Image 1 (cartoon, rainbow, N blue to C red):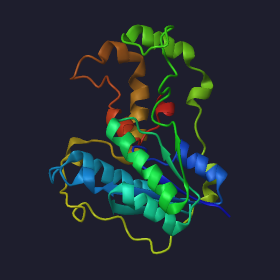
Image 2 (cartoon, helix red, strand yellow):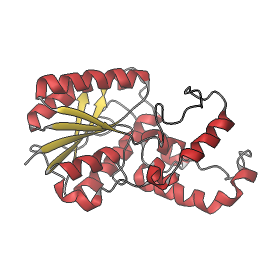
Image 3 (tube, rainbow, N blue to C red):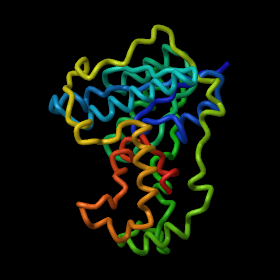
Image 4 (cartoon, one colour):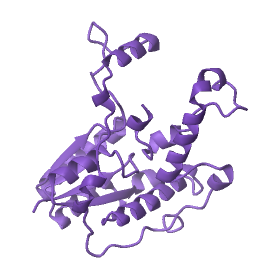
Length: 255
């Protein structure tokens, strides 16, 4: 019975999750983990809305995984060391993650992949999840990246098919979710070294459920988007940017 580890990063949801879906379909036992990356967190101010937003999303993600029979392992530290060590501890044959494209993240993932292979004798497998098209999938006729938005938009739409935004099933294979031994509760915001912000006062929708609420609200205003999007006093935009940034909503659902 093969086991796998899914590493959550900028994809803090259960449904339509490419890496989680792939792992559940290919392996008998699937563990899930999120790493509070201290190399990112330690330089931040103690009051940071992004950290609180992530923390709320993590709590809801863990609760949803538990309803499905699994749970979210949480660790603090540098993922370059934490992920390979956990992979070896759980004796998994592969670590799954969704691709990240920022330079620092790509360097981190290269180091994690090398350490996973060296220390855990496991594969490091990534999936396309946070974008519809990546790398060289949409280029000019000369094979170069677009520099102007309008022709890029036209080429993007011409390239798009229903398969590009088909959801990745998770709940159909949720029976393969696994609980790790010695699971500990998710650390509180204070235990992470941060304070509560004004997110709830501002009415920012939080977690997967908040993302779905914002999505549903946007669809009710979508017909008026072109006429209202440039007026800050009107509820004319999607307000989904933070949910796309941290993956509490699937880009495929929005498309």
